[in-house]
Length: 194
Image (cartoon, rainbow, N blue to C red):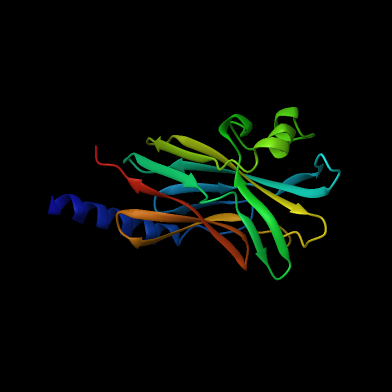
């Protein structure tokens, strides 16, 4: 039992040391604790709800690849849909359901009817993802930010990405960085024993 924990600790230390060697940049890939995280570019549209209120709808498609030989349990969710209010921001930040998330990063030309329906009706239903990612397997996530145009759009300046930290050696927490002042816990991952 102690040997298993020693191997896990050694593995985490090696991964965190190697993650410092990968350049961190918007829209680029980086390695964090054995995960290869490709933070996609900001995309979006103008969205009008049923009352004709205009919103900035921005979204980010992020691809996570397990670069280890150990399966990883990924858990992504927000406690609520993420209605945030601070000095000048009022936004809903959410995980898109899997059926609205593409299989890989791409550029959308228009909003689909399914997405409009989700924003109209289902946005306040919290979404979560629990997935085991095997060696070299990918998981694609799409995070959305919906902001009434009366308020400052938190996605400007650019720089949204997934961040990780390991206060507990058995679980790595994940945060969604919208901008330098707006960082939200969004989930965690852990290494599974074979």
